[in-house]
Image 1 (spheres, rainbow, N blue to C red):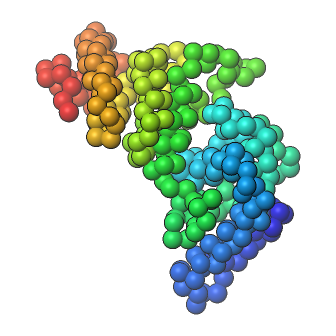
Image 2: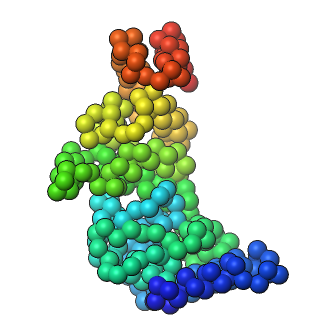
Length: 282
């Protein structure tokens, strides 16, 4: 199963084969195939807890991340480069990987059924490979928040001055992953670290923390994070700190909109007008 064409061909046959085979039968066959591939690739490492943990981290990104990540990106969030390369190499039969594995190699599955399988406890029956979605999102959100809290972000730029794909992904997706995550102490620590360092830079679209999002939606995203933490996290003052940051940012946006309304979309100006009259409403 190590050839990159082996499982891909089998996948095509299973998905498009005998029209009398029902969906359940097809998925059962796919599940058997995927479990066999995973066991063949990683059974030899079961006694090595650190190795299995790194393999699981890569599987988490395959299963619940949004979009395509590369080897370099996973390295930025703390997975050892050798572990990423080895894991990807052993999964060539279910990933689209051409040639040598380099920092720029994208981690892209051959078929959408593979990440679906990884997060389905009824089909992925080996706990070494199963990705629990809320826990997986917590792992990803923790990694993204730790990345965004760094003070040495300019050191991440490439020779042309561009930030890596993982940095862009972090700025766009950290709150989405957190919103569907299971609370863990590590996630709480990472969120506090970002809140106390660069959350306001992110809200203000400042320098490296700039993003395609408009200013008003960023406040709404932050409010959703505050609600998530209030409902899931401990009563340790972080929700109140988020309240303060949100109120301060709302005041800044209201003042900026009054001075330069052309910088804002009409629908956001309507929202900002409500903020000016009533403050941020939960």
